[in-house]
Amino acid sequence: MSSHVPIKSHWMPQLVALAFLTLAAACAAPADDAASNAAAGSSDASTAQPVEADHFVPSTPDNVTWGWFPIDKEPVLRVQSGETVRVNTLTSAGATQDENPVDFLTGLGIPREEIHQDVLDFWASRDGRPRDVGGGHLITGPIHVEGAEPGDVLAIEILSVETRANWGINSTGARSGVFSTSYPGFREGDPALDIPPESGRHVIHTGMADGVEVAFLADDIHVPLEPFMGVMAVAPEDPVMGQPGVTAPGVQGSTPPGAFGGNLDVKHLKTGTTLYLPVFHPGGLFYVGDPHGAQGDGEVSGTAIEQSLTGTFRLSVHKDRSIEAPMAENDEHYILMGIDIDLDRATRHAVRAVVDFLVEEKGLTPAKALSLASIAVDFRINEVVDITQVVSGFIPKSVFLR
Image (cartoon, rainbow, N blue to C red; front, side, top):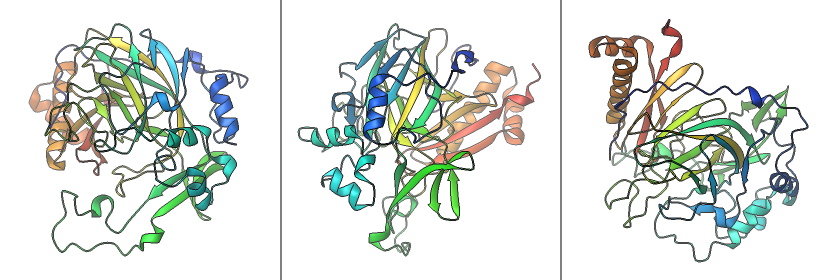
């Protein structure tokens, strides 16, 4: 399945003013959220101030899906267009393995008091959940947005993303990520990395250093945290056998991203950015998960810092616009995405999406749009390890004088 973003009608959304987000430090998280953090001993895991929201969705077992995007699941919440929602998400690290999570995580050196209760609750709920299809992500949702209908656009304004824990896990292996034998670029005889099997799971602690929240990869290596949700999606159009990630009728696995969004792993979809997704079902049915504390473009080992996060979003329906695949914007850039199994074709789709945008929204000819794409637009490989691969064109807003 390939997808690009032809612009089918007027499309130049502007970010809604976020002045109300300057809140006093006394603006506490909802009680359920605060209790969850306190139980985990991680109330100080992030210095980001909690953002006030109209609703709160905890990551309880009933609210979390494992590895797929149901199109007929009863919504965990219904909101009006323009309302805000604060959502807890869970990393799968520690919550999905066969071993009891307390034994598993304490065995990795994580103190018992730093293990969230919802990790334990989800692990206890695994029996009966289908595991012969889908991916490995834990995804909170869906959230029904009143008025959203097929053909509309759902805007997801990312108001805040905060760490819920002061640890995460990154996994590596001799044959993981781009070195996997199933990776599209693999050739018979390609050597594996010299990585012993027992060294491939890395617990990475996070905290403050010189006023900045960082990951302590080593005593002398501090990686600044830029938390974001690897998965943001609407319920996909009816999944068809043979499409990427569809191995059972009607079941869209969470591994490959697509027109519905999903496992985009675009690290730039962080606080202050708005993601736009096409709507395929009434209510849109918004899902969010696969939380990451930090990730490089590419996610080349197959994982980021897999770390439980809380996100606050404003969900708005746009009926005067139409798109066919994800796109985004922040204060500095319009972000047009190309998605395909083949990285070259994903790049081609991203370039085509940029050209279409510049023609439709900025009035350029296709020739002049391609020229601008070549001299001013950065095309970034966002992820290359999830069956379908994502390339995004970053159009700088600063080049447009009006």
